[in-house]
Amino acid sequence: MGRSLCLASALLSANIGHAADMDTVIDQAMRPVADTVSGFIFFTVPIFGADLPLIVLWLIGGGVFFTVYLRFVNIRGFKHAIDIVRGKYENPDDPGEISQFQALTTAVSGTVGIGNIAGVAVAISVGGPGATLWLIIAGLLGMSTKLAECTLGVMFRKVNDDGSISGGPMYYLERGLAALGWPRLGRGLGIFYAASMVVGCLGIGNMFQSNQAAVIFIDVTGGADSFFADKAWLVGVALAIGVAAVIIGGIRSIATTTAKLVPGMALLYVLTALLIIGLNYENLPTAIAAIWHGAFSPSGVAGGMLGGMIIGFRRAVFSNEAGLGSAAIAHSTARTTEPVSEGFVSLLEPFIDTVVICTITALVITTTVYEPGMVENGVSGIELTTRAFASTLSWSPLPLSIAAILFAFSTMIAWSYYGLKAFTYLFGDNRVTDIGFKLFFLTFVVLGSSVQLSALVDLSDALVFVVAIPNLLGLYVLAPLIRKNVIDYEKRIRR
Image (cartoon, rainbow, N blue to C red; front, side, top):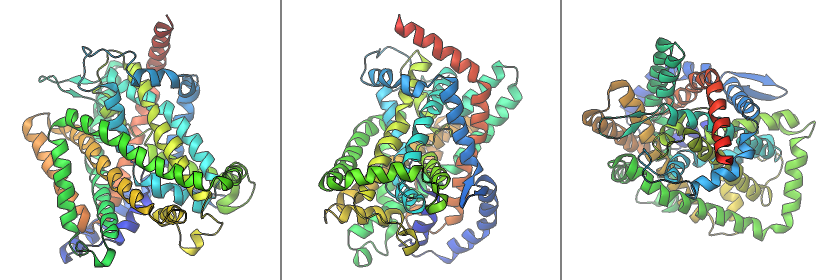
């Protein structure tokens, strides 16, 4: 979903609605719990002027391990992934609910978000242009982790009585570890994963997205003079209606929508950004040189090379979600008899989200307005990105705002499905749990647009990232199975 954790608090604190006293009481009551859990999950170790969250090290470690263990499948398998997505191996009679292309767009809709616009600006303003290179490297490493978790997602998915499919980390943790003789451990980790996802989806996949969409919408319709300035809840209601119209039809409806929405919103953002870069082409060589030299500078902003590396890795991990297992929930529903083929499809996600979109954002900033010390002057995040766009084309913040709202909307519909599958894993997959969770999710869409519950958002952020612990543990244990299937699949493809 391309998000920035520190940005969530900033946007929520700038909420344009009027929080009721009850909201403040609830928020204050939850704050100690949220701070305790967040402090545990995002525990940092200071290294040469930059704080390294251990959860980021855990996720990057997974990317390095699977890249090496699977023999750089992220590079070798790129062309084959493109061939699968364009339908070269498609068989409409294969078991599954949606096409492999639709599975990709559904998962991408959950990762491409505000972090692609604001999170990159935070990385550059704090870590310098050199952070961009490390962000790209982290994205490339994340491709291998995505392949591993989405391969298992299809391998251990569950076909329900009505023909629908349920899958994701909770299922491959339970079923995969049971196959190794650890059924209780697998079931316990699956329950922990699902419970964390249910709460987690309400924050960064819901309230944070509706809040940022409301803030951006009110800003482009007049700011403080907008009719909606004190009626943010109306924006939330409109978003909830839009989300409901999509998710009521289940994964097929979500996939059909994202197959149209994701290419369109990505194209709008990328073309606008490329236009800005093209109009500043004379600055491009200098920007690329600054990114390269800054990545290996022995000193500088936030500790030079090491600081830029940490900041770039952190933003990439928060952006593409490799290692969290969320994308495996969508990819599990793809029509295929080959689990590894869906793993290949999924490795395109970090490439699109981080390597392409985040890099383009970085080039827009570095070719226009970036200068050392901007963060000290209070210029960072989405403000820096907006200033970079507007510096060349005065009208460009409008398509930027439209893209940001679409990013938020697409994230909500994808995460509603992730939360639903986690919820039905815990309480059973039937019509009552299905409708009950969707109504619950839509309620929080409205609340997020106008209510200040920053403690809930912070708590959900932490719970979303804590799932990386059981997810990667399961991936490590099942790694020999993944490698065996990848090698076998590639041999058959070559024949």
